[in-house]
Image (cartoon, rainbow, N blue to C red; front, side, top):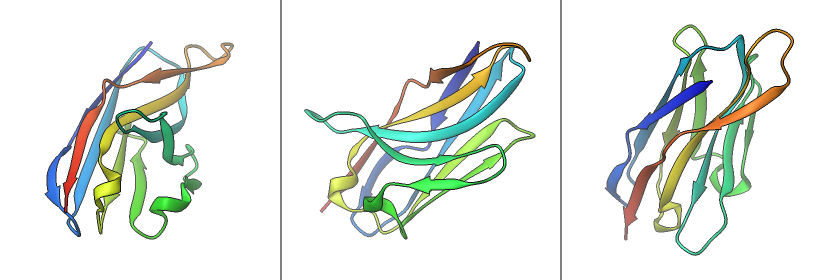
Amino acid sequence: QVQLVESGGGLVQAGGSLRLSCAASGRFFSINTMGWYRQAPGKQRELVATITSGGSTNYADSVKGRFTISRDNANKSVYLQMNILKPEDTAAYYCKADYQKTSLSYTTSSWGQGTQVTVSS
């Protein structure tokens, strides 16, 4: 199983930047898509950005042009550079990894514990 540990959250003023990191560990055959999701109080968890093992990316419309997702396959890590932060970006941010336990396994998912991002106006 893959364990994911996020870091890099915090409190920042509107217009500022933060960089989130997520490191994967454990026993698995491969990690496919990795991504970042967020959940604000009273709202459903939503996709922020995803990146495939080949580097193809997908972003929520609300963060396009401001956030950049990247990954380091050798270090089994994914990052989220967040620029021009807005108060509406305030949420708990979760890392997700889709992976195979063995070469014959179906793809399954693992989630991190989350890291809080708070943007003050």
